[in-house]
View 1 (cartoon, rainbow, N blue to C red):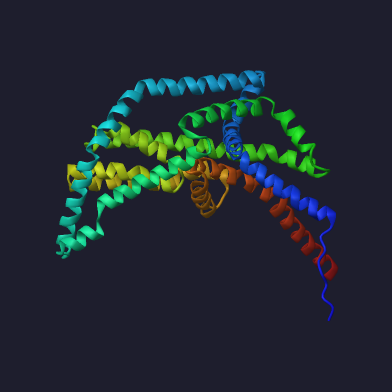
View 2 (cartoon, rainbow, N blue to C red):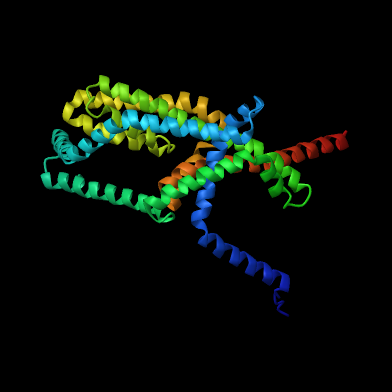
Amino acid sequence: MIEKRKTITLSELLLIVAVSCLIVLMWQLRSLLVTLMVAVVLASAIAPIVNSAEKLRIPRWLGVIVVYITLIAGLIGAGLIIGPSVSEQIQRLANKLPIYLENLQITTENLAMQMGITQIETIEQFLDLQSLTRWVFSSSKQLLVRSFGLTRGIVGGVLNLILALVISGYMVAGSSNLVKGLADLFPQPWDKRLADQVAPISRRMGGYVQGRVLVSAILGFVITLSLSVLGLSEFALALGVIAGFTNLIPFIGPVLGAIPALIVAIPQGGLTFLWVLLLFVIIQNIETYVLDPLLVGSSVSVHPLYQLLAVLGGTQVLGIIGAVIVPPWVAGVSVLLENLYLHPKMLAQSQSKSDAIELDN
């Protein structure tokens, strides 16, 4: 039996070398790639507003400037209005955190004894809140390090965010020329096919980002008012802001936002704790079954499992930044998968069935 040896042609060897060099280059430019990913997400979020302004005969570049000035002015205004109060409440909350954790441990031990668990050592081993707290802080630190590791610290992260804003502005202002230039790199008919996907990708990604931000703002406002009514007015604004920001992360964010409020509610008594727990359960259900389908789900059209995997994968690779920007990218990529593969495949299958029926007849 003669063994056939696989020989590598010169073209295959050059392809392997080119792919290897491309991977090394992308790794070296990973910080820029993340900045571009953020820029695309920002561009898709403001593109519908700029498109509406263009219909009013406002130049795109002017529309981009007006949108960004309005957004920045709004953020600065909100920061000046509620920023000092939020900062003060968060600082007081951090100072009282050890007391709240101690109350949590005492309450848990009392509950365990009422359930028949009388061995204090077993309770303390099972509920080692100091170890749990250290784990939470170390995990949060790792997420922050992973988030800012690509940008070399907080200053680098701020500069990269400014760069992403500038790049996204150029993307939206010169979108037609940019799309045409990128599409021309591909052979026919793929150049036109890919160019036709830019608008639906932008709509889906933009709809996701806008819906996520709107849902988070609504929930942050409602949680702040509700906690004030329930007797947690001392930290209501800070807890509402924390819940609003964490809610930008799908699935995991609402749970993370509820934990600080529940810890603060424990010293207020069991009834207050139950009311706060009920509040977050109701809000979570309203978000899942009303707000998300109305403001986010209708524009994403991605299975929740894939969204969850996108959040977990983005967090694992890019930290908090990945948890926020990877899901809209998954929503955008799903457009390419649907329009360039699934829909043509279903059309071909239906056509083949029709041809088979005609042959049988």
